[in-house]
Amino acid sequence: MARLPDHIFIVDDDLCYGCGACIALCPVDALTLEGLLAIVDEPKCTHCEHCIPSCPVFALEIVPEVSA
Ligand code: SF4
Ligand code: SF4
Picture 1 (cartoon, rainbow, N blue to C red):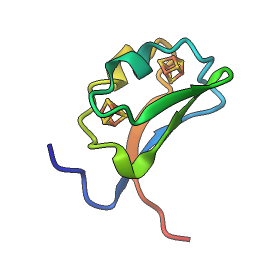
Picture 2 (picture 1 turned 45 degrees about the vertical axis):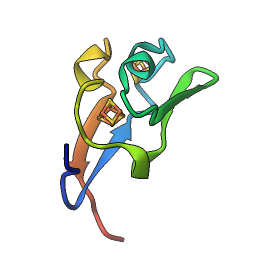
Picture 3 (picture 1 turned 60 degrees about the horizontal axis):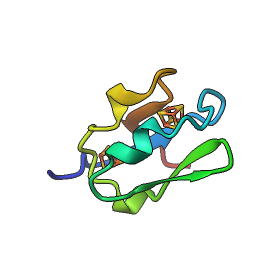
């Protein structure tokens, strides 16, 4: 699965409460739990979207990358 060009996968750290559901689902181990927050190793993420529906609080998203 190709990454979406000019998009990044994000974890909304205001919403995530560290349940870990997304982490178990990532086929490339791009997600890790640090305390009560899921952290993504973004370059590793394939934008496959497998994890996105698993989040009970909708904290996971693939969004257009905004250049500063
Ligand atoms: S979108 Fe796919 S590769 Fe990226 S963190 Fe979620 S499950 Fe892993
Ligand atoms: S599924 Fe959602 S709330 Fe649970 S660890 Fe992942 S991002 Fe956080």
